Image 1 (cartoon, rainbow over the protein chains, first blue to last red):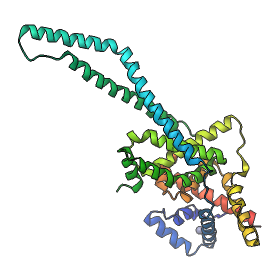
Image 2: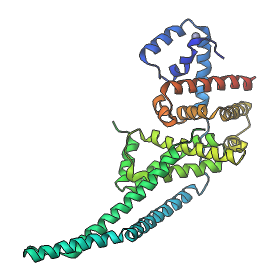
Image 3: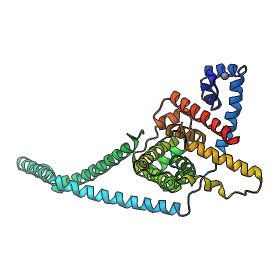
Image 4: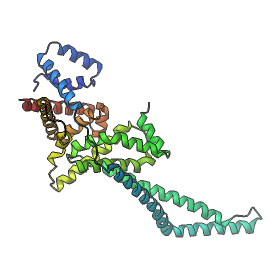
Length: 157
Length: 183
Ligand SMILES: [Zn+2]
């Protein structure tokens, strides 16, 4: 154990993580502190030992298992997209109905008032359906973000 | 300047699945090394390595290269490891102690020098395993992954000066334990 009060900077010095001034100060301290000099040598050999720790290869079948999981992930995402669409089509269906009715009513009024360009009643529905799909996607994203946030948060032991 | 791996991730976001495969292959050994030393169980380390990349896969659409790719990736790995440790702790599972020995067991044990080197590696692995979690994470992120202090701070949610102190304490402890083992 190094009792020198400058030794706090020793590891950061070796890691080249000291600011310029700190580095200069520590270097000049090092030239006349035997304790830090010895510790530097020990830390260097520890560094070498840490750098040569064996790497670990995953067991056979690791990649196959992983790509199978990714395939399941694709499937689940596809299912979520479909379910999300139909769930929203369900509870917002009446909204489509209302909107379409309003648009249609407006179109009828317009048509009655003035002989303007013809309004295709299906047009509104098609546009809405597209928006629903986007909505469903956005909700799935939100769920996933929350899942990831959950993983990122509150895990300090 | 964006790092090369962030660029690969953006390529994957744009639909290039080979870019994802490339990231997966190049980071697997490093993630394994990190996670094995965190959870001390080979099977769980493998599972977690896969979990990290499933998360990466899921998050691809929303990915924005705000930090270096490695910082982001090890942030995910670190959090999953903490989750796993917490779960194991709740279930009072004892981490398997032989997780590291098998990595060195099949070397040629003839020369006594090699035996000695192996003994020291095992002592070092054991000493790392006994470090408090945050010191261990910081040490592994620094020495195995080569992350800078600021990146480690981002991963651990700590200031650069606490990273400095975590690494100082960790390495001081390791040196003193290696001296014991060398006696
Ligand atoms: Zn000193």
